[in-house]
Amino acid sequence: MKTVDNQEISGISFGAQDANEGEPGPFYLQGDHTGGMKYRNITVSVPK
Image (cartoon, rainbow, N blue to C red; front, side):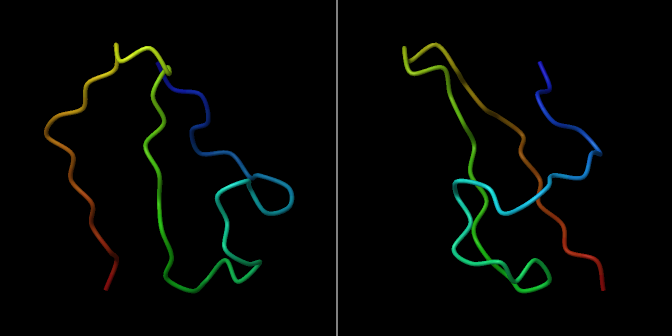
């Protein structure tokens, strides 16, 4: 299930280190806090 997809988020999010959107930073995968979430075949690509 997608919670946010291709939408602008106003302001910085909870996980943001600062407001520099264009700078490299972390990304987070959120689970459901019960141990029922699994992730596989995750690919991260950076535009050149």
